[in-house]
Each structure stands twice: as structure tokens, then as C-alpha cells.
Figure 1 (cartoon, rainbow, N blue to C red):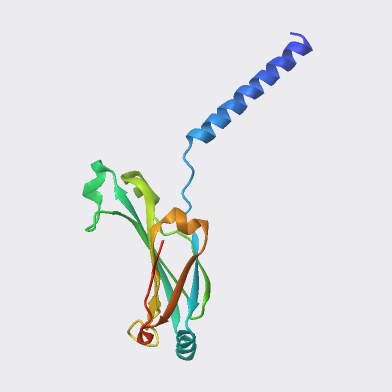
Figure 2 (figure 1 turned 90 degrees about the vertical axis):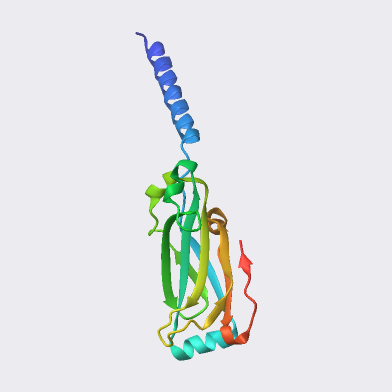
Length: 168
């Protein structure tokens, strides 16, 4: 075989490998990213009370999804597949909180159809008092929306009577 034929064969082989890799990338589903950020803001009164009581804030993330018809028997009471819950407790001050998504049971994704859904609630850590003292906005929507940009949730004291808002 001449050098020219070897070079052509090498180029042809490289093109075949590249085409196979591109085809595999297109056919492979993109991995689901479960981590997201929550940007918590506090009313002045809530910030002051949390600081005075040295109380923490808990961000609770519940992951779920709709079952495939064949997997409906695995659904919980509300008809969804439970993927897991992650609670992140932080110092009682406003700021960014990272939810890693490491508590998720990824084997259950095979039981689902459609997108992964996410519900995020925020409440006080209940160390200084047995009761939650915060009224906070909440997120209820697609995980993909929360991954794109931080979820902005505002909290006030329950006693302030501020209306909470649904974010999605």
C-alpha cells in the first residue's frame, strides 16, 4: 500500500469515527442536572428576628415526576413518582443557597414520563421556637426552570401578614 492510500484510509477512518461520535451525542439523552440555587431575601423584621434568635433557615426541595402508565402502581398518594427530598439548612440571613440534588434516587427516573418537577419551600429551622416563624414564597414547576437561573424567594415573618407568591 502506498503512503497516499494509507493517508486516505486514515482520513476515512477518522471521518467514520467522528460521524459515529456525533451520532452517539445526538442519540444520547442529556443528563439531568439536579442542582440549583435559591436566592432568599428577607423583610427587615424577619432578618432582625432571625439574627436576634440565632435561628436558621431551611430550604426544602422535593423532586418528583409523572409516572409512565406501566409504573402508576409506584406513584405516591398524589399520583407522582417521588425522586427524593433535600433539605439545606443555612445561617438565618438572606443570600444564595445551593441545593445539590445529591439525595435524588436516579433509578426512579426510568419510572417517569415527562420532566422532573420541583417544589421548593423555605421555613425557619425551629431551633429557637418549636414553630416556623417565616412566611415565604415558594417554587413549584419544572426542575429545568430552576436550573437555568436562581429561584428568587422572599420571606417575611408570619406575623407581618405579607402575601406569599407562587414562583415557577
